[in-house]
Length: 371
Ligand SMILES: [Fe+2]
Ligand SMILES: [Zn+2]
Image 1 (cartoon, rainbow, N blue to C red):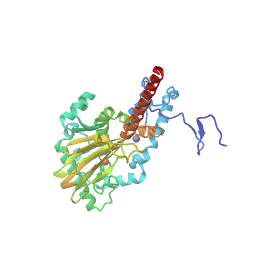
Image 2: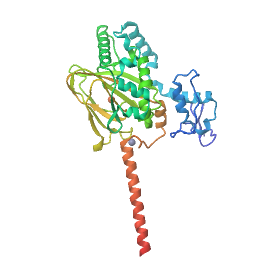
Image 3: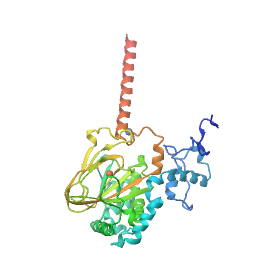
Image 4: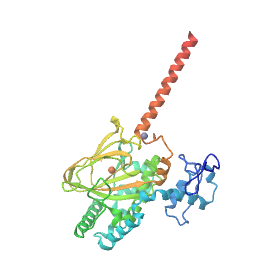
């Protein structure tokens, strides 16, 4: 019999004590004022620690700041290996090889320059940083899908030229390139050829404010890693993209150009793992046509696909953003009715039948008393 130190304490294989009470709480402790972590040497952004602290088990809130940071760091680290491919040694070497041989075409793309990159309306809304300012430039054509004008036309052109330059180098050097994901045969990972610091900033300062407001239920406030890439569609490239979900909590998809027809995105409702293959409700059906410079923001679990680009050439910029905290908490949850359309439908169904049963009971009682 394994030694037992109480109902919630077990001894794991490597001899460390794992206490099942020591896990994050789904509902944050709203009254708790988190500590600042700015002065500590940490592998993650200090703001992640501050927002995560509200999810600590209540008995941990009185622990020292170092102990709390250590506990939270361990949770965050668990999600790095699959989230951040580049942390592995092999991937590091791959990047080094690219960086020591590839000559960037437009150096100004490698440092974020807000006024050159973004349209003024977007910049203004982000700097005002209120839900109202966001809503003033964003439309929501279907529930939880947000559309807004984001990139300047010149920025779109420069980025496309940079990618074409990179692809040209890959072909000439016969370099074995890693494509963005298993679904696309064409396209490139922007983080792999020097754009990671720029994209980090883009995500932290310009996308996290939006996802904090629009996607709190899927970790929108604690997004801590990203995968940035471009995909290319057209006659000589990928044609379309099958129905799928992204390996992300929140996805940003911006069309860069050029001239094309077709290529519409089709959305069919958000689903948890268990319900990913269930049917969709009529109100979940939504098709979207790309416009260069315009962004679509959606949950990674919002099922979607891309129709064939029937003529011309289309390039899209994509950012998959993930939250280690959300992934950890999801492990201890069964009901995702706050974002899964099917979980929500089943919950409503249960409520309806409970209501109906109560009504029947009341009628029966009334019948008894008047009999
Ligand atoms: Fe996707
Ligand atoms: Zn579900």
